[in-house]
Image 1 (cartoon, rainbow, N blue to C red):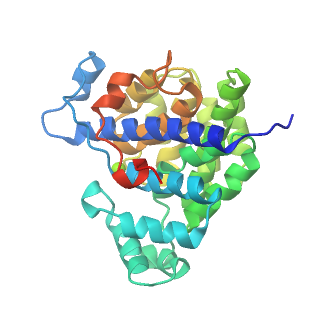
Image 2 (image 1 turned 120 degrees about the vertical axis):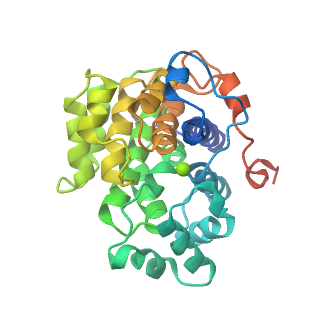
Length: 309
Ligand SMILES: [Mg+2]
C-alpha cells in the first residue's frame, strides 16, 4: 500500500521520536551521576530534575533540523552542523571530538571520518544514537529510511558496522512510526526480521539482530549478557540489544527505558536508541507513551532547534 505523507506529519513523527530519544538519553545519563542508583528507579523513584541530555540528543537535534529545513540529508551540510554545534562537555567520545574538530577546521568529512581509529573509521554508536527521528520521518519507506540513514552516518562513521547500526535503528523507527499511522502493532519477531533484511548478512550488527530475534521472551538481563549492553561502545555491542528492547516494549515507553536501565552499560545511549524507536510508535503523553512528567524533567532542547524559523 502506498500513501502520501505530508511534511507536517513527518515532522510530528520525527519530533516524537526525538522526545523519546532525548528523554531516554537524559534519564539514562542520570545513572552516571554519583549517588543515583538504578535500584531506586526500579523501585519507582525518579532522579531529581533537571536531567541533562548528552551528545546523543545534540546530534539528533541536528538531524531533525536538517530534515525539516531540506527534506533530506545533505551530507556536507550535516557534517558541518554536527561540527559547529558540538559542545564537547556533552559526553562526546574522544574519537568523535577529533573528527568534528577536523571538519570544523575545514577537512572534508570523507577524509576526517576515514582517518578515525588508524584509518579503519569509527564503528561507535554515534550514527545509531542520533538516527531514530530520521527513521520516523521516513515512515512511508524503510528503503528511504535506510538510504538516508546511511548518508547521515557516513559523515562521521566510515566503518561498515557503524553505518549498519544507523541503518538498523532507522529501519526499526520507520516501521514503528508506520505501525502507528496504520493503528497496528507489529509482532516483535517480524520487526526484527525486517530490520535484519535491510543489513549486510556478513556484518556483525546483522548477526546481532538475528540473535535478538531468537532471544525474544527472555529476561532483559540475560539478553544483554548475550548481545552486549553498549559497554564496549560499538554499534555491534549496542544496537541489537536496543532493538530487542524496542521490539519487546514497542507499546510501552517506560518499560523500554526500565529494561535499558536494568541492563546497565552505556545507558544514556541504549535508552536514547530504544526510546527513540518506541516513541516513534507511542508518541508523547499518550497511554504507553513518553510520560509528560519525564519530558518536563528533561533539560529543554537547544534554542537553535526550538526557535521559530
Ligand atoms: Mg551520550
